[in-house]
Length: 305
Image 1 (tube, rainbow, N blue to C red):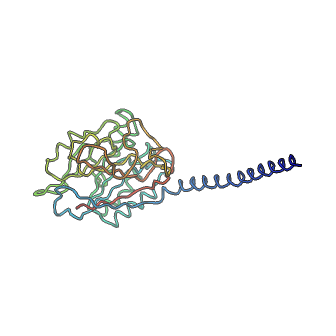
Image 2: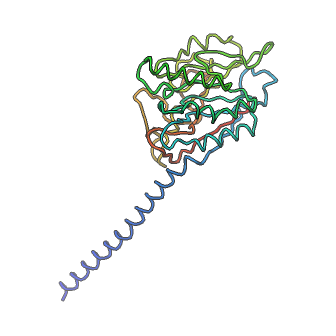
């Protein structure tokens, strides 16, 4: 009788475990389905960041002025996030900042009509009278490892089209945002890939005591800047990781390359030389797949003080 009772008990335990497994798997599948669905929807949720930044030796007329930052549009990719680009452009026009900065990767491949599409998306900025400056990224050269005639030609056509709608593209150049007696400069570096950036030589063009902003595409370019030469710098490239799993280490899931030193977004601490500060935007578009998870596209405004 005891053996029969034990047998019945074992059978009952096995049935209970089976029920628990049968109950758990639908929850797991449902959760994964929800996460996958949100990953497809999140690219269309534009997050707006706002920061107040103290910039050394900022001219008085610039105090309280705002700078808008966007990056990594990736127009031309299948399922490209052009709807969110339009919303970002519309919001910038409505908020009317003093300067608009675009940190590269306008295009994703050399698809037919991609340059015209970029021009159409961004032209409302300059039509509204906003001052717009940009640098190019690795995708604007179609991501070559080295310089090539074809990649340089593509980047050249993109640059000319951007300039034609009033967006100034900077290649290791310095422009004055404010004239004497209190000059204020913008430094724009060339693309880190394919080896177009010249951080040290370019930053040396700015008078030592002058206020400046620095715009790069790849965060690695920032690391080469001399101490106290870039009190406020902006970059893109990382997409903020694009897929960021809660509780997991922050890492760049899509398109990570061995030379990438910064894989995340926001204010990057303990990176670069002393006295230099870098903000990395998550950008708007995506690489490899049209998915973002816990990493929405970003438009950021900086109020200068």
